[in-house]
Length: 329
Image (cartoon, rainbow, N blue to C red; front, side):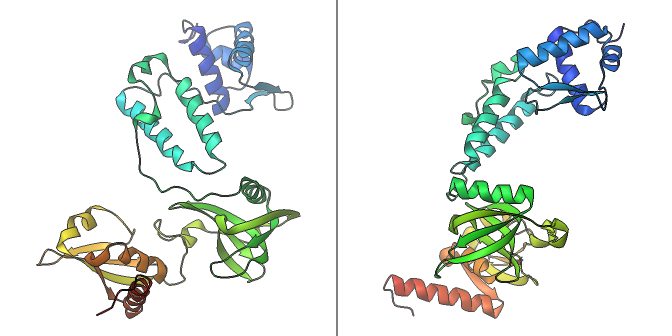
């Protein structure tokens, strides 16, 4: 008899699903040999898995192998051992909730429920609930569910899309796009696509897409290569630049500790000055985002270089002063 011969039925069924998914054992004979039971027991276990747990396991006569048709969310008892593993799961479930206000939210809630309901009984003492963990995330911008489905379908099936897009301060325009990548960033969803109107790769804010239609016309991904590492050279950025701009910003001593302890740009380097202030250098992919970054610090940050960044900040401050009827000195 094998080393699993005395394993309880529920644990044996769990092993069967794992073996089939891993591809290490795909026939009743192999499963029986590995688990130290006869083929009848294996067939009975597979029937129970189908009926009791709702897992779809089918036999492929051509490949002469079993396949699991649906993903299995039940965690192995060996998977969650100790508080660290349980805490990791709770953190993951809480972070997934950052998809609120999107059509994905219902699916995330369903997945979280499945994960927590199918945990081993021994973890019950941890009172598993993601709501015990809280995170401050930017609310995601709302996207019309119909538009979302069209865009995702186009991405999955390599279909050209017709969209109506409203760029800032401009009238809506009709565009034909080749969808390449969908990206979530700081409260917004962005579709990176090849725009036939502009004849170049562009980033479209999904919340500004007024209408979307799947043309049904397929395109070859090989004709529109997309390199995510090249497009997003820095994880803190959205729109890439051909040549990132080196920037220097000086922060007052009052916020020095905060500046040093948080990574705002992957490329940032901080130097502490004699007066306690901090000078940060980083590569910005566009001056707009760098200007916004400096303005968020109020009077605690000052643009040093390049000159274009200094002028951009100056103009932004002048615009703010005018809007609030303040006098610049």
